[in-house]
Length: 125
Image (cartoon, rainbow, N blue to C red; front, side, top):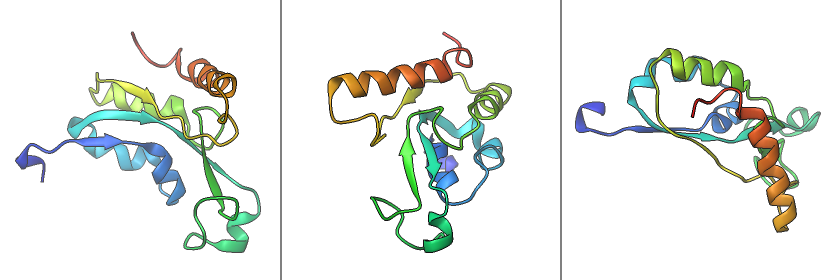
């Protein structure tokens, strides 16, 4: 696949939602990553026990929801450290899909500030 010139867009939030360690899955593929999306995943307490991994996965009845970086289960220090250690020097873009910090320009701005505070000391540039 990579011999065809294809590259990866890495988003750790989806791996958390699948029960996969984002760093373990990331490490072998770092040379093939062209872009990193910073989005977090919050596991909703008790909901996975009700629905399981294959139950509803989004919306009000799901067992997780996407959050801005810093408000979920992703260990951003481990992720960014693994990227740098593996030679990644590309962009890390915040993907804002947080339902709590959405709905108005003020809430979106507050959500982006949370992401900035979480990532600023980890990302060079």
